[in-house]
Length: 144
Image (tube, rainbow, N blue to C red; front, side, top):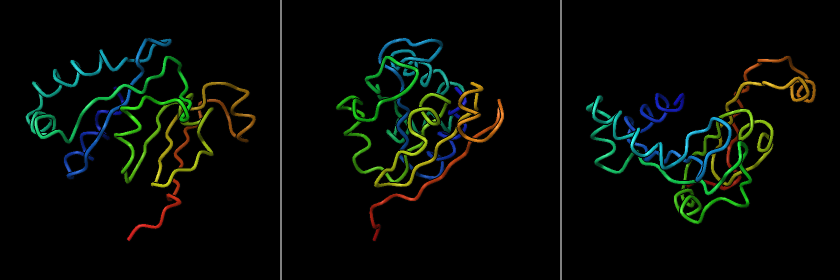
């Protein structure tokens, strides 16, 4: 749910935003099936979000995953299609952004956001427990 303010702001500025969530439950992560009706509830309470959802600028897609991390080689065909022409990919959370994809490179720009919650990960990164990570990488593709 912490991604809603960022997603709302990006969509408010005219970006198309796809919120990807697991296909099935994993630990305490929301699933795409739970996120879609939640987005509609937010839209009912926030007229700006209602406009974004109605215009298709803010939508939900299943990642195809059932893990608290994400293997980018195994995302759902639907998410791969949504991301094919993306200008920015945002990965959020310790598992998805830090443990498995901190050094992942994309053809588009990427932003990895998360909090370090395991001492071993903090040691590997040269940080401390509960440090926040915010890593922006320029995409490898040349933009016109």
